[in-house]
Structure formats: C-alpha cells, structure tokens
Length: 326
Image 1 (tube, rainbow, N blue to C red):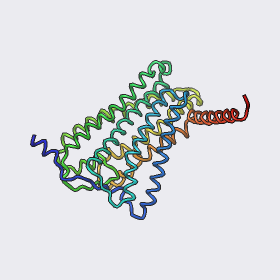
Image 2: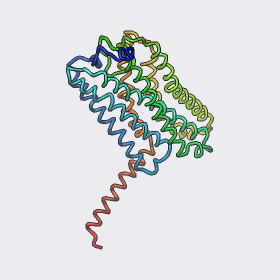
Image 3: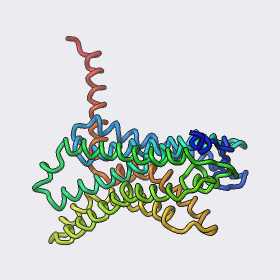
Image 4: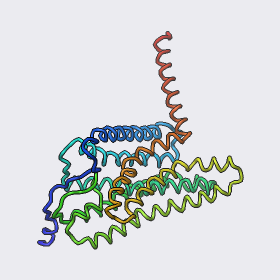
C-alpha cells in the first residue's frame, strides 16, 4: 500500500507548454491564422455531418463513415486548438498535470478512432470496386454499425490504458514541454519513473490499434489500384478511381505526417521539424478533410444543391400561402 502511494506522488503539479517557439511579434498573426483555421474546420465538418444526416441520398456506408470521420475531426480540433490559441495570447502557458493528461487522452483517442475509421472506409471502397456483386450483402447496415462501434470503443479503450499508466508516473522536473500540446513522447521524457514496462505495453497497443489498421488500409488500396488497372476503358478507370481518390488523399496526408513524427528518430535537428509536421495531422488534416470531400465529391455538391432547392421551394410555398386566398 505504501509503494502504491509513493508511485502516485508527484513533485510537479503543472507543466509549461513552450508552444511553437515563435517570436512574440508573430503571436497576433498566428492567433488570427489558427483562429480562422479552427472556425473553418468546425464549420466545414459540422456542415458535412448535418448534410449527411439531412439528405436521404447520402445514407449509404461511405457517407456514414465520413460523418463519423468529421465528428472525430471536430473533436481533434476542439482538443488542440482552443488551448493553443489561449497560449498565443497569454504569457502564462501553464497546464496542470490533470489537464495535460485529459488533453492527451482525447487527442490519442481521436487518433485511434481515425485509424480504424480510415481502415473501415478503405475496406468499404475495396468491396465496392473489387467485390461489387457482394457489396450490398457484405456492407449492410449491421456491419457498418459494428465497424463504427469497434472504431470508437477500441480508440478510447486503448488510450485509457495508456493514460492510466502515465498517471502512475512520477514527474520530478523539469516541467517544460517543448510542444504546443501534451503528446506522449514529451510526457515520457519528463517522467523519472522506469518506462520499460510502459514502452512495451505502448508498443503492443500501437501494433494492435495503429499498425494493424494501417496495414489493412494499405493492402486494401493495393487491391483497389490493381483492380482499377485491369479495367479496359479509360473512362471506367477514371470513374472507379474517382470514388476513392478523396479518401486516398486523406489517408496519405494523415499517415504520411504521422509516420514522420513518430517513426523518425528523435534528434535535436528533427525535433523542431516534428513539431511543424505535427501541425499537419493535428490541425491541417481536420481542415483538409471537409475541403477535400466537398470540393472533389459530386454527390456532396448535388446534396448541397438539393438543400438550396428545398429551401427555395419552402420559401415560395410560404409566400404563396400569404398571397393566394384559399
């Protein structure tokens, strides 16, 4: 009992986030820039969620997954950016240990959920292109709900284990985190506990909840590209590729920056670059997703037009009810 109490003791109650390490004169500009990014990200992702929920034509598996992905991106941005914006305006950039662990918990959970969602979306495209005759039976409503449940439950469950282990660490100084949010690597460096068991568990969980979905996504797209190349007509190849090109762009952006940040060695030269690349998957990817899916997606364009036409018709009906006598 005494050992457990000693493990829970910590000499540090708060951390100092250094942020991007930008000069003071750039902070107002960066604040406005990231504020605009945050507002556009939230607006774009919420628009996709509302559009998918309201339009019956979009009630298909691909857009069901996309709506959940937009929900994850909204949580991403709301976990990272508000605290970052506060730090750009404030001289005091402290964050309590509990707040830091909470921020990492929701951030890490969103990463876990997104890896599973991207894998589910790639599997959906694989069935649609490579197994079109079996698509309706293999990707039905029950399967979609099960895949979504697996994504959300596994993402939060895996990160609950990691955060529980971090909470057992003793932080005895220094308390400076050279980052703009609470990430796993800086927290581990500030701990004065033995990280051997923790690193082993994290490696195991990373393989199950991150590497496995990545391999599934990667193998799905190998099969998709191979099937597309077998199509004889150029128009057929273009049409087949257009159904998955937007998702492929998101996958490349997300995993590309994730691999650069977490796989490359942690050297002083790469440390500042890692911070910049972290911006891509924590801030720019949630911004890019709604832009990619709306600008390159004809069905979303049609849903927006249907929404405008519907509003116009309702407005005309109201005017006619006021003008015409009955």
